[in-house]
Amino acid sequence: MKNELVWEKIKMASSIGIAGHINPDGDCVGSCLALYNYLQENFNEDGKKQIDVYLESCPKEFLFLKNATALKQTCAPLIHYDIFIVLDSGSIDRIEKQAQELFYTAITTVTIDHHISNTSFAKVNIVDPKASSTCEVLYGLLDSKKISKEVAECIYLGIVHDTGVFKHSCTTEQTMIIAGHLLTLGVNSAKIIDETFYQKTYVQNQVLGRCLLESILVMNGKIIVSTISKRIQEFYKVGAEDLSGVIDQLRVTQGVEVAIFLREENVQEYKVSMRSNGVVDVSKIAMFFGGGGHIKAAGCTMYGSVYDVINNLTAGIEHQLGKEV
Ligand code: 5GP
Ligand code: MN
Image (tube, rainbow, N blue to C red; front, side, top):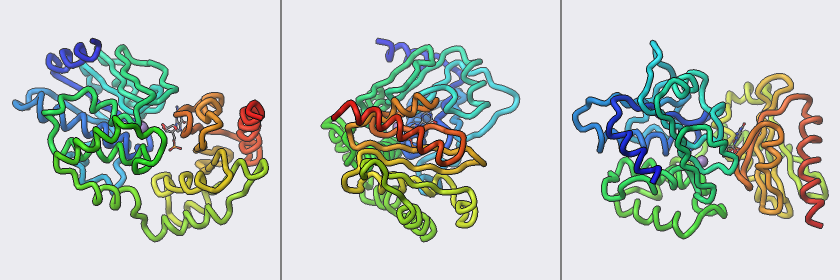
């Protein structure tokens, strides 16, 4: 019911803003561009609507998506949008500062998401924590007969990334049915999977190797932790987008329940990524420290020495594991 209301508002709107979270991943870029392209193709044939999409950046492997270069970071003067739609973000502080301002000054606000930690911060909240990805939630809102090959590519890319190429347990029959339909629209599956997910630059592989080499096991091998300092990131000239595969490789270590990856962003400031193999709900731990995410994949920012950060996180994990035995 509420979804029909959103489509009514979209039809009536003369300006629509779209935004996704900072440090955008495949699901974020995929869902933002899928919605942007779908609206341009089906609701803006005469070009009278102003439709903008705000994203911090676009990782270069996603630049083949239609309109990937149309992304904006800021606007001046401030635009008061009729409708502002936030994708793949569990809370409003996940989007960039000016995008937050655009959200607060918009007439109607919508969030489309799949994070269990979503705080329902918009007027209309379309959140399905059982969905593999925001792209899957978005697909459910679109008229499947009006999805072009270009929109299909965006959605397919988002699903591929958030399911880890259909291997994470968030992958359901519905996910596969959607992916199957997208293939019929002409999506080149092998190309998207290889060139946007598995392919790494030489230096990305070097850094991955280094993070694995320096990882440590704690709690009888139930937790694996790896850290990368700012100095090492600067030495290899890598950023967050180059390190996204590290946590997934740590997680598949035999015997591990939880993988933790700490990326030093500033002195005594760490971006924390966590993955669980099922027993521990890492979203609870991330939320406790001001972050969020899903049961099996969550993150937050923590302050203090690396030892303090690890001790605080492992205490939370130990507490949950303790309840299991
Ligand atoms: P990743 O480890 O890939 O950065 O993030 C895993 C999941 O946790 C993603 O779904 C992401 O949205 C969420 N997440 C990561 N960091 C934060 C954070 O600082 N705050 C919130 N609310 N969610 C986060
Ligand atoms: Mn997502």
